[in-house]
Image (cartoon, rainbow, N blue to C red):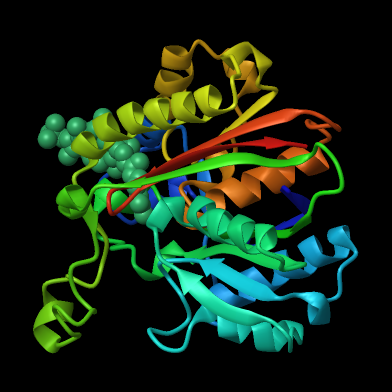
Length: 324
Ligand code: ACO
């Protein structure tokens, strides 16, 4: 038995932060950001918006597309590293706001791979008898971005994507998902302060340790390698060649990473879905936001094969193949 995506949704805050805006905030230029990352603008929340606000909007759209009532959900999983609170989970906030009274709810923390990790948990739940699972990837990366650090502040954006998963009634559905992690590389991308290891204090705030730190160049190299390996693993597990893939939805981190991975795979770039120019790196939200766009633009039809691949802090990496 397979699980199948029954509906997709996405939401991005209306406030746009362009590269020109960033030129006024840090020593950078539109030319540098565009050339090195491919990002032209990103969305950021207003002070009134939190992670759950973005997630709820995406979830409502996915439920409407799936023609499923919130009360029919068995489980809500929210992939995020920027939830509303350290406690309780953002999934519980979303459960309440949707009125999903029968659903269990929890968050999943796997950074930019969070959505694929959550999808794998949801897939296992469906295969063991659950009817409907809501999987949300939602991030307010602007809350952990150091707006004085040009190395990182140009990269990230806020947004949310969601899918409703249910049992497949045919060949369509999730063919396989593959999850990996290597904690030895934890310090490549991290937010050092604010957890139990370094609780918030005036010192942590003064040293700006509650913001994301990243060794960008090393991350870049690992990202290309792990995404290629993960994509090949997903293809091999299903006996597929790269030519058979209709759309490749990679985690939207950097256009140069996407080009390098597609080139190594021998996949023509017109089959790679890209929205990072408009949204930047939205971490766990990037793949479901991109998927929703691909669906709404009718870039997939019945039987289309979608390859997904992600990497992120942890280090984590993941991939999968979905038959639409
Ligand atoms: N504007 C202008 N110059 C800059 C900027 C900026 N915004 N940022 C860095 N530079 C400078 C650096 O200071 C450096 O200057 P120097 O040569 O005088 O020392 C120079 O540009 C080159 O810096 P590099 O870091 O070598 O640049 P690189 O080509 O590697 O690009 C980037 C940096 C865009 C961060 C790239 O490494 C990257 O995309 N890495 C992957 C990041 C990623 O995908 N992270 C995803 C995980 S996020 C998560 O899991 C939540």
